[in-house]
Amino acid sequence: MIALLLRDLRLAVRAGGGFGLGLAFFLIVTVLIPFGVGPETGLLSRIAPGILWIGALLACLLSLDRIFALDWEDGSLDLLATAPLPMEGIVTIKALAHWITTGLPLVLAAPALGVLLSLPPSGYLWVLVSLALGTPALSVIGTFGAALTVGLKRGGLLLSILVLPLYVPTLIFGAEVARRGAEGLAVQTPLLMLAGISFGTLALLPFASAAVLRINLR
Amino acid sequence: MSIWEYANPVKFIRTTDRILPWVSVAAVLCLVTGLVWGYFFTPDDYRQGATVKIIYLHVPSALMAINAWIMMLVASLIWIIRRHHVSALAARAAAPVGATFTIIALATGALWGQPMWGTWWAWDPRLTSFLILFLFYLGYMALWSAIENDDTAADLTSILCLVGSVFALLSRYAVLFWNQGLHQGASLSMDKEENVADVFWYPLLVCIAGFVLLFVALVFLRTQTEIRARRSRALLAREGRT
Amino acid sequence: MMPDLGKYAFAVLASYGVSLALIIALVAVSLRRARRVRAELEEIEQRVKRHA
Image 1 (tube, each protein chain N blue to C red):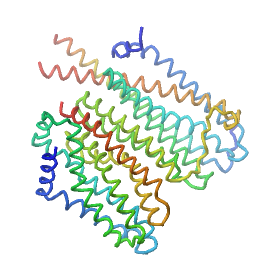
Image 2 (spheres, each protein chain N blue to C red; image 1 turned 180 degrees about the vertical axis):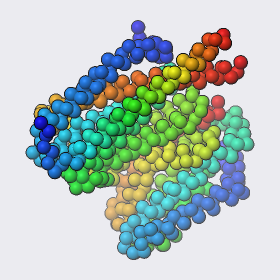
Image 3 (cartoon, helix red, strand yellow; image 1 turned 90 degrees about the vertical axis):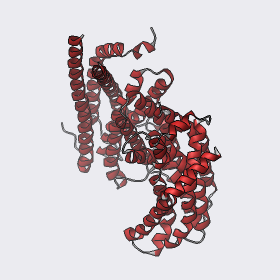
Image 4 (cartoon, each protein chain N blue to C red; image 1 turned 45 degrees about the vertical axis):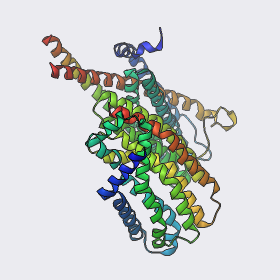
């Protein structure tokens, strides 16, 4: 399993797309928002947590179709399927690799981008915490979507249509934590719900993704 | 005689062919009666005025939008567990009907909300949940039409339906947490005190019956179509091989 | 006979209009597709029978 994780990470680094593209996209979205809504500091600092969450979510979405696409094309997915590793393990590792290459950099970059949006000082910690808790769920749910669309040509658009509705609860609770944190309110309830969603999806969704992948490899 | 006999496509088509005219006629009758009764022969509500007439479309379509999804969920489960093709095809047939009912519920809701709340749309939990439900219908239908192999499509969409149901429920609670609403509570609870007044209640019941029957008739018809289309594809494929 | 809708005429009429239009469109689409698919299948079955 660890070998598979290392292999995926190495591939992502070597292909170059993994770290760079998602981050660049996140940066650009964050820069574009003030152009859209105006440079007024009060407004920006009020919507900053939400923008950071939406930006991270979209950046995450961008790289989802790469989770299985390469392995599908060169046939190594079939090899993996016949390996002694259970399919559930494979999809979990894939999601983990996606999180390390996409989610983690986004989490770390978010406070820096918060400066651009004049995020209130009390918000930095909670944006960081909520993204760190929420992005694993985004990766796991995204892996499910990627498994659904793995064999399809032009699956990218379909993938986003399938995955975005599934992101709704995570986004709501994640952004709520960040917003309440930024406004200095109590964050416990949404934080617990967010953690619940993350751990729940992490525990259960790999079974669905594995089932889907098995069907697609039939 | 068990219900599983209808899993045989030929038997399903034969039986539904017999029932379909009756259901359709009943659906039209109920809808016309209910809507005409509701439109022409009910008084205006003392608070909501004439807009109360929208209830005869809004409540039944919203009800059936959710029930259609539940029916798809049950059909998907039957497909996963017992692998009856009719079940998978019925789920596929129901999706556009459910999506249309969702649009009707949203559109009538917006038209009703405008004079009552002074806004077409509010990010109220109920409204938002319905919008999310509509997105789920879209994704489900998109996945069905994207995959060429019938069995693969049936498998994948039924799993999507299961996962989607869980997330739809989660979204419902998330949205409730996120914003308190303008929308009134259930108009159909068993508690008589909370219900709408009797004058509106009886035509509403007839309309609900009409929407249920319409849904059944459409699902029967569309399932037959899907069965036939599937058979055509199978025959063509066999022809191509020989 | 026509009920007096007062200032809410637009909301009520538009609701009925939109809903009925959508329902009729759905029924029409379903019926058309049913008829087409049925004809297609019959044609294919005829052909298969002739070949056999």
